[in-house]
Image 1 (cartoon, rainbow, N blue to C red):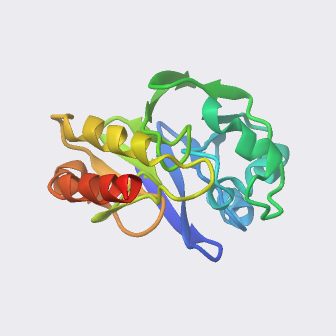
Image 2 (image 1 turned 30 degrees about the horizontal axis):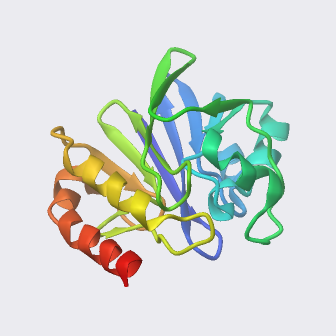
Length: 203
């Protein structure tokens, strides 16, 4: 698997192009991502969203139209793609496939599992391909996604972190912002973040 990364827009949101067996998959095309994604794909197959925040989905509609490829997104974040709840002027996009919690989808013989870790958003997911996680805004290097946005939920974030703590395997993590890390590295500081989130929701 080949991975191309380009931070996009004012929040430097990582847009990823992963290539498996000559097929290109675009993950989280944010603000201004369409031109880069088109220039750096030769056989685009699908667009995948980790969650529905505007800086991860901004270029969905433009890429769907120009490349004529389907969009896969977590079903619980559909309202963000269609209704622009944060009022950012996000172009609306319509997923061709709404992915359920912890569902594995097969696209052109390549399997993607949308591991559901809600809290940052209701549908917030990690997209697993082989031994790699594209973690969106759930996990970053030594940090986690915010849980104080509209539609965020601190109690769900605690449950998600506890779920991630129990995973025995190690994965390379490519986050929605910043540099790559590993699950084992992040598990070492998850107890700290669990206590931080609990403190804010109980205060």
